[in-house]
Length: 268
Image (tube, rainbow, N blue to C red):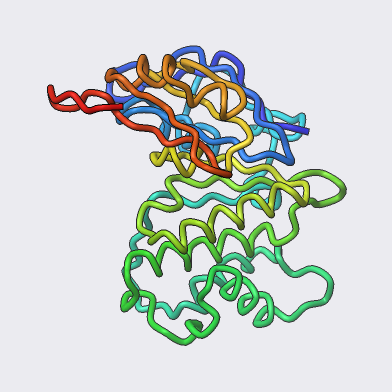
């Protein structure tokens, strides 16, 4: 099973943001969406999650996403936005527990408190349940929200069908150790049969964990395929508008270095 779009287009404020986007993301893999600012990465994700009205079609596990009722769709996919502001003084436990309101994570007879605690431990916040959400750092808040979406789709599959994680810049506020933790969580979810779609800015991290990469440029898919094919000199230089040279790092992915920035030349 997979997620597919066909001829997906989006207009916002009288401007064409996405034009004829046709993609396929496969369960069991991590698909990363990369590209320069304003290329349509987050807009594409918001179409996939139903936040924006669009033309074209989007199917999830073989069915048009518009055929799902909201509560049914919540069974199959969870969404981590770039940022979430809360006006009320919720505790961390209460924020993560929001994933349980429709009962989607109440499986195998586990108590809800146990599930919340396990989700917090998974993101490295095991002792944070009683703390006020607003007192946390930006990176800690980001991990609390990640725990919430993980709890919503606690098992990677349901009825032998994949569930999906949609992550919009999930490592933007995190230090190196917690960036690697998020990568491990995404890969583990995919290894267990789920699908992951993540908007990313860090191309080096993307090269380390993405199975497939969609490179956006001007609201269209400029390149797609395996990470080693897309994260290469020519497609990256064309999309980002500056010379980019990739270098292989030992036992990891690629080092991606801009050759020219702000009119200055750098040695490769």
